[in-house]
Image 1 (cartoon, rainbow, N blue to C red):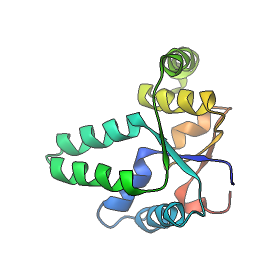
Image 2: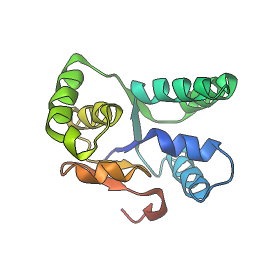
Image 3: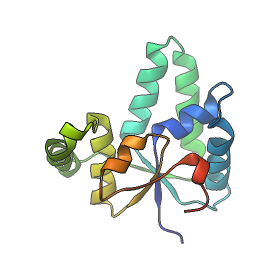
Image 4: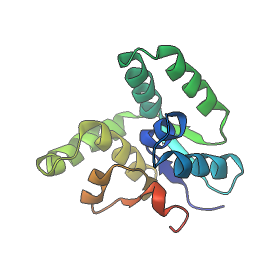
Length: 143
């Protein structure tokens, strides 16, 4: 089995969104996950981000439907544990000055605590973290 790769929230949002340069690559990523060609992982915070974002733009039902669709994918949804939150504060303390966002440190803490080093994301801010290897959706599957 291939090493798990964390999928950032933007993979789901681009795949579900309107036409955008990232839409086709993100749909391909999700298709590979569905076909078992990619061992995809998210955490519970991804679901919260989706619900929050879609409710803020008054597309609550779309957000709910997207989350229900994610539950049908063969991917692991990791919890955010007490150890993850402690690790997130540690990472944020060290990297906030270079622009790392609080939400992103939650993801990286979960990744670190679960021995996951790679994530697929359009968010270039992850490149600032030396312990994470970001794969841009345009570069998948060249990882």
